[in-house]
Amino acid sequence: MANYTSAPEDDYDVLIEDDLSNNEIEPCTPYDPKILSAQLVPYLYSTVFMAGLLDNILFVFILVRYKRLKQAENICFLNLALSNFGFLLTLPFWAYAASHGEGFDDPLCKILLALYSIGLYSEAFFNVLLTVQRYKEFFHVRRCFSGCRTVAGSIFISTLVWVAATLVTLPELVFYKPQMESQKYKCFFTGLHFLPADETSWKHFLTLKMNILGFLLPLFAFVYSYVRMRETPQFRERNYDLFKLVFTVMAVFLLMWGPYNIALFLSAFNEHFSLHGCGSSYNLNKSVQITRIIAATHCCINPLLYVFLDKALRKHLSHLCYLCSDTAPQPTEEPAQSTSGEEYHLSRN
Image (tube, rainbow, N blue to C red; front, side, top):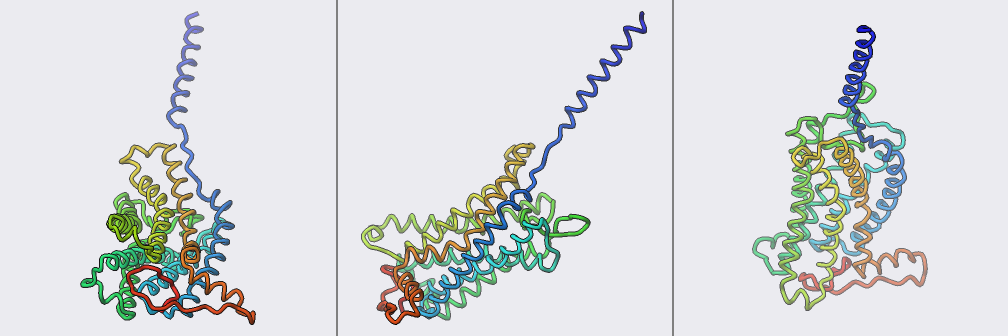
């Protein structure tokens, strides 16, 4: 009888121990970015590439053909278009990789990363440069930036901006470590390609670099300049077309890249915000991917803003559409105006 009662107790103890071990090893399913990429990226990026290539080429043609780059602002707009071209060239490759579930080997991988990062940082820097130019023109601050008004000075400043964007990108290119898959190192758009290592300090450094130079610096220039100009009576009394154009381009850039920078910051510093749990990590990784996909479509937006906000550009665009017609409306050059910013057109001399 004693042996009979001890056996169920032993079995009961074993069952409890087994249940506890199962609870302790509860699996945490990681987020797989390839699923969403395969569904969305190929079609979206192919469309953005074709639309962005067309509207940026048309914009550059109109800018060079009718404006001839005689104003500092137009040189900056041209460089913004070149930044978009660099970013655009990477989209077909990311679309192909997402549709086939494959990554790229070196050196193609680093070339794509260089075009992607340099295009992003140069656009941020040129937006800041345009904002600073509008600010100093509004308040007639000429002693510090008078050389930027000449074509030679604008080209020199633009060259410095490209050099700065390249230098900022060097850490990603020099220390980049692709992901391991099928015993081969490859790079994927689905991953955080500018976080080349798993070291926490390195990840934090690159994330803060992206946040500060790619988002906070343009945000500070935008908010400071706009608030200071908005407080003046002349800003409300007169119509400043160029100011509207520059600040709208900057605002759209910030709106498209802001959510991505926030999601990236929270993902990199998740342990400081108690977001390192299974569910939080899953949602953060998904948010980083979604906001990054949306932000990458920005490279086809700027020419559309120019068309909506610049009357002369629309006039030249309509002229190109009817170029083969004998009755095509001839574009008229706007008379030269002061550089204070009012009634600005991209086509003026």
